[in-house]
Image (cartoon, rainbow, N blue to C red; front, top):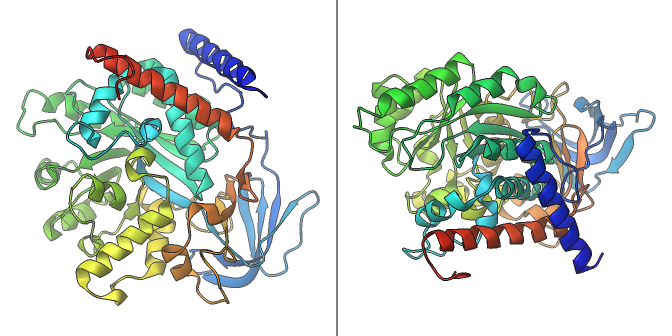
Length: 482
């Protein structure tokens, strides 16, 4: 297809999306950037791989098969027989393990990658706050879809989207459409209009979605929650009642809640504890330099923590030391936005966490690669309360699987044994050969399935151009000023 054909296709898709949002349809629209998901998940037999189940009872199986039926792990073991019509995937010389679980991200900013340039004018918060009001619903759709495609490419099969730019209900509709078109499972956390506003989240819309969620959940692949924020000023008595109503609404609807504890982290954590707001439904994000007494209170309440080492260190929150969180019972890792982290790379996230800890401790043996892999899989699933569905290759769980090539130039030579160190210190997203999400093959032989990546990238470029032009016009800057 020539350039004219691409641009015509993009314009047609934009018109279709605009019309759909105007009508309030909220259904995912097919097109060259949408994942062409089959009606039913095929049966699959993965053969002859090194199977890291991340299940404490099953352990590792150095040469084994994984059988997938109807989107679930059916069996794990040697010499399994294929069902009639099953797709056979030869995993000889490769590691078969659960897909990664991203416990915290901001997917809507994906197209802003490279806009954060480490100057006062281009720092993360100032840039995001300047550009966020210029996002249209379609910009939201493109950014979130692009973020999930990149995540799946790197072996992430679950992403938690803290969506904190819900300017209108149409923006939320677009976010939900993107996650329905996404090649992985997700949790969509309904947030406020911006990071800094004291304006209340649209609780009637949140409640309406929750009460009709079966219609929106893509057969359970998407879950709903609240992206909650404490008052911008913790001593602002006028704002607390509105924020507490948000939390009370989520709890009445039995929705999971995530809250940032960052920047002024110590005081924010103390505010949660003093007001007895922690609970098993709450995920605390970042919690930089948490004190032992704060962690004890968190564990007592049954809450969880999401660590995002790449972004926490990039914005200057401090060093993310695993030893600080050694006693946290429910702990996972997150990307925190592909644009701010640089990429949706869980291998890089694990690697930075490991290196920061061993460097700070001045002790190479202070970090276990296997423990890092657990944080990125089964412990991450537990932190989200999803451990009964995902996080390990346990028969009965949903089939979220990645297959990693151990013969690649940057990994090999691999001659057997526990592959954890190879994966944490050497692997990259490009080494993920195959990804299966909810039983569907979404990456095969190193390439995404059903996604026209060049068309999606072209659409993202057009989206970014429009965002910057509108933001510049809003502040009276020259057109195309960067």
